[in-house]
Length: 377
Ligand SMILES: [Zn+2]
Image (cartoon, rainbow, N blue to C red; front, side):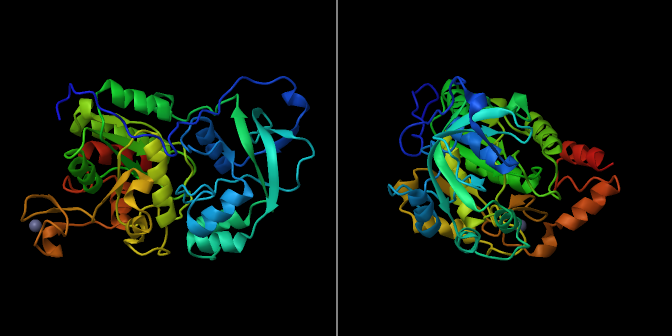
């Protein structure tokens, strides 16, 4: 395909990019206030900008039930995780004001329904465990007891953590169209990108028009590398090692749920809304601890017909530098043994960085390692 051809981007999930932003209505200050947690605020912002299309608000019971049981919205469309707002009591009026933790009103919710939910069942179905040591389960168990459903209109958008990386789905779609891209692969990450993931993104990019590096910048576990450090790592990596005309780096405002396989589907569908036709799914995508099998997040895609998801997953093995091959490879492409591979455990890498030492260049680009060393200091 030549670059001058007009390319068509993938349709949003459900066919239409939702926009739930709007002007501040009169009388918001008189409405009952519902404060949102930081995870719910992330969801609200993604409802506003269409990242969660076709959702227009927090889920009603019929959608919630079918999502939990069958990974589908009530209308049959695939959807992997609940997007719900937890409250203590049903509101009295038809509308409520949704606020941040400081009490600032951000949105109005048209009250549709308030319903009870079973935390253990949601945990078992969505996280595949009821173990409270799982961070997603712990968050779920700490929630208020009812879900409040209804369409939202957001008049005050969240301050983006990284304004230079803040692109809504309409923004990434515009950026792709401007570059003449039709086939775009999305890469979700919540870690600095070392050589292994650089390799996966480049192998994927070889087969499509463009790459969206889409780091998650919402809440993560406290032991994950802070978003500000990661963003600096992405900047030096892309500046030094990717052709500018083939890559867009933008922030994904979601909070991590650590739901492993289901979150892989959810991440893919969100990226479809951002305009990605392809999505990289590595080993243990969105996993935590050893709750999920290494390939569970890839296998779960078999539970849908490919046309139902629209976005095409690209599955990868773990990559490494092989000294004999003299290049990056995976078990699929390299016949040599582990002794020939440059392997460093996460613990070993943290130890090196904490001592101010750079990991080998076969493991991490020196520019990236230097950012991490400075952050550890
Ligand atoms: Zn080899």
